[in-house]
Image (cartoon, rainbow, N blue to C red):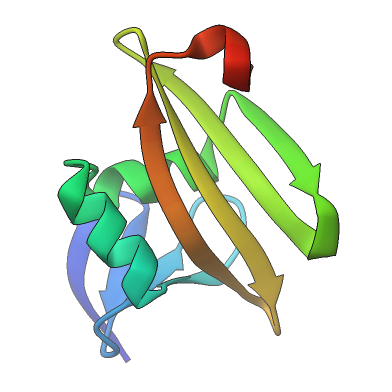
Length: 104
């Protein structure tokens, strides 16, 4: 069941940590508790996480089917690490950095 609107292209489902992407595909975006805590500590909003996953500047495939979605905003690089599980995109962690040379 789809509930409240989070952004123009994503909706919060009935599960607290689950969002449904509506841009190019239908995929649930699930935030782990760790990702939710890190996002809150680093002042990264749920809308930002969804936006980065839907339209990243760079996507890098990591070992063990993990993807790193990168987006540059206001001289900070925001990184979202996620993996695909059974048609869902599970966000593992998120963070911001000003060390562009290290992560680009």
